[in-house]
Image (cartoon, rainbow over all chains, first blue to last red; front, side):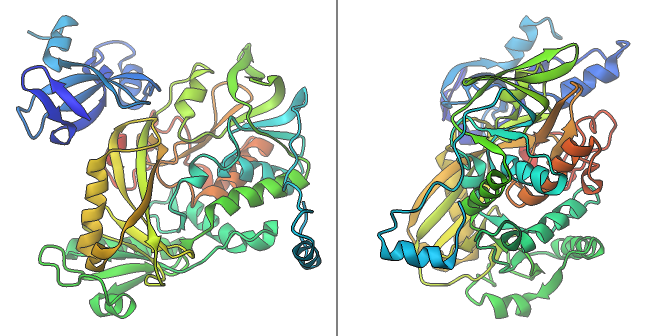
Length: 95
Length: 416
């Protein structure tokens, strides 16, 4: 698989390490009344779709940026690559 | 289909034209006591033990493709009882004991071969860990022997003992471990279940569940609605896809694991060897091919094939351990889809929906578990209580903080 890095261009996926579902960006509010339930779901449950999957890749052997890669889990086709920083900011996360 | 010596002779003399299919090919009835989703090793074993141990024969196994076409046909055929933790080892020990009597039990040749598994150690720390694991195995009724370098050399003189980086310092030998003819396991269980009246319905995919007032009443399939008092999902690899239809999210990710077979060779390796310093394990099939595998590809996948970097990694591991492999040609490789659970251990449990049961999350250890998985799942389905060796395999164990994390690596499935 070739990951088209938004800054560095096409890179072999061997340069990256994989974390998992990009929903891990959306860390629950630890002060919420049901925080324990939310963190259980956040940490342990997954949609695990067959098809398009948004997921976090870390460019460990490169510029050490986190990417959100949209990839098809049935064909391994990579459909879109974004900087995780941009995705998080677009969702109103810290400046 | 029943077999006898007389029938073999008769068929040999008459051109083998009298053999009939080993199991029936029935149309589904309107309803069953138990509908098992998934005609793999675990589903067929569950049906077999439901009928044999509990007398529940009004059972259907529904399978979207052909039986035994999933992971029971895509593994490296190893059986073993060498786990560490209390939640696991009694279960896998039961499984190995069931393997030991399996062929007599279902009267089918599954070629169970207890040729021994040797886990190599390369450092002092690994030797300590091996000693601890061996003690845990012995405490749970399994067998283990700690070998020193000379002990390993006597068994496998061709290994690379003096590798500068990873010298072989010994190994943990589990003599009762071994290999099995994997397809015959599915066929043997299917035949045994069929003879007891279980309907095996192939080419029948589940498209949905009928759930009313928190109770599961049956399954919608490509062959119409099939009612059931109890519906038992048993589709490791596709668990998330099936249980999603019941509105459930699971603590599971699907990952691809590759395996390989070499060209046929004269007998060189009479047991199973695992490399302790890299991801490589190897045995030799009765046909002569070396069967080996390594690590996950490490990303979510439903494709039954992997990528080349893992192929390279496995071959490098093989070359580091057995330099003589360098002249061997690789014949085939394939990938299987694993239910990777968040702690590396499986589930055999009721769900929060009445009448809906779940078996999955086998990671890359599902094949060796086949008999005990069927045994314990049948027990759960028949009695609504977990079998005593499977009490830890609950779906809510993460919520309760009762993970069964063999490697102590935390909630990231691709590390297990």
